[in-house]
Image (spheres, rainbow, N blue to C red):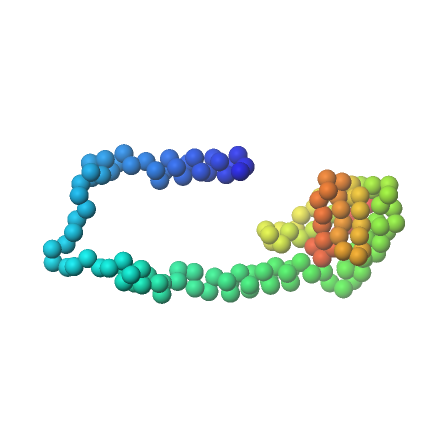
Length: 147
């Protein structure tokens, strides 16, 4: 768990586990109606079964990911230049060249640029391995520039 996650959990515990405001009613007996019989648990659960708060959520995610995938594709000419730069990079990868990599981050939908050293270019798996052992698939790359 990261520090940020721990912080969020502590805030949530403070906000949602504090029952001080309800101390005056906490010990009161649960109200039971004399007019209406208590609903059996099976019927109570069935009452909420058809409720789908996230109707269409999966379709929305699929549309969003398709839109992001389309944004990450390069025009033919730019793709050809990128492929040539990757071939050039593969030829000199033993020297651990310093490059600027521009890539599309599918998780955020943002284009990012990173200056780093490359230690591997694998055309079989279509991946570039960076000096910190991070791996970028060719499909997310948009530009490779030697520094």
